[in-house]
Image 1 (cartoon, rainbow, N blue to C red):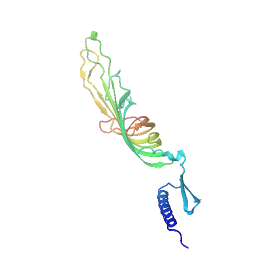
Image 2: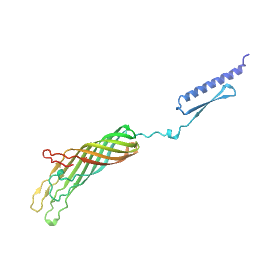
Image 3: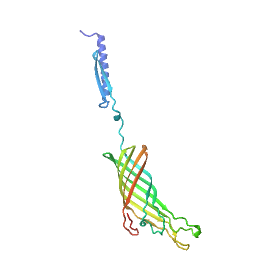
Image 4: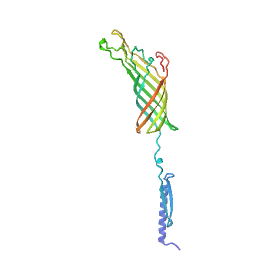
Length: 259
């Protein structure tokens, strides 16, 4: 004996509703992350026609929801104020009279660029180059007008140190800020210029100024520092570094220079 027409229509509507529900559930299932979905099937009082699909989303732990910090890099461009000691050996200067003051410290800039291509254990490997350029000056005391001469008896001295240093660094931290240790091998040059001066005595001749240039000598450096980024493309940094300039042999008019 067949079912009444009304009963058949209700079963058809329930079947259509169930089909739509299953399609929607499958759509959700295919877009949920793995291990974040549980499905509970419960039989209703109307049998298969009353099947209820319950989808429960399980929140992943808070640690998993926080994105891992990015490693240092991918590149940096440095522009820093710098200070460095200057060599005081006589070989780095033109001939000077006794008592001449020479500069022992210079001030200038340190510029550089670095990229960070590889991860080595806890450290990010960096390669780049830095250029240090500092200048120092020294002047004699102004002669007393009572001596009858206002000409200086010793020259003004201007010394410049330039270092070009390719560097290899090991960086520890994240892209928001990191510390590093680095070493480099490159070249360093010291140039010095003196002003004209007059020797002791009113009638002494004016001695012209001179200059000296060590040429580029091999140099090594070792140091470390840190960088912090307040914005994506703007940060602050410091670098502490020791430079070692190798001795140079005499070449033509250029004298030998010590280490």
